[in-house]
Image 1 (tube, rainbow, N blue to C red):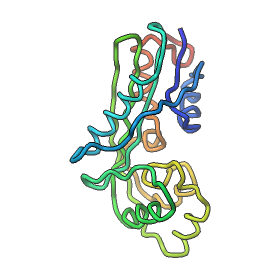
Image 2: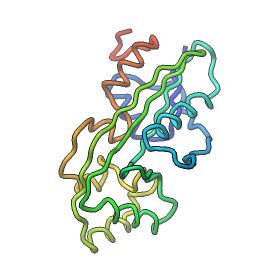
Image 3: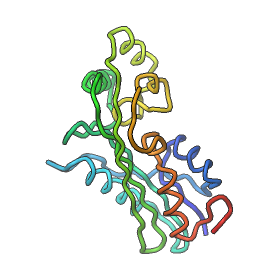
Amino acid sequence: MKLILGSGSPRRKELLAVLGVIPDVICPPDIDETPHRGELPRPYCRRMAREKALAIAAAPEDVVLCADTTVAMGRRILGTPTDRAQAEAFLTALSGRRHRVITAVVLRRGGRLWQRAVDSRVRMKRLGGPELQGYLASEDWRGKAGAYSIQGAAGAFIPWISGSHSAIAGLPLAETAGLLQAAGWPVWGVP
């Protein structure tokens, strides 16, 4: 039996290590992450995590763990920016406002799926022009939903959260531990 992490995110690997879990294989799935027309953020995030888990080739006894993190402003999904201009647009929209960060986790073992989604609320402080431009120049926004990560440099922009810090970072620890145990994978060395 192997644990396959269906993510190339170093943050997710680090968060799993907090649980005493080291994946045997890291295999980022290659799926289309385009939202469906009119799709709301939470159903989108859950669908992405599920599609990622189903896209990973695994033996029936293997455990596949996949997650998706989505930044949402109301009904709008702020995905991973494709370029600096889009990152600036996302951060300008988030500046001085509250938004949601949704992280969905899916575990697959054989034909069985275990799923959880965690919603957290985040407030970003109002960003000044030099501060925003300095952050954009750092390129820390690359590969990040909503163009930021709370555990990176942009953590200085987040004065308030309500919910799970680890979910905002990309993997809700309490929920992931419960799912792993439900699937028969030991957490902290305990099955």
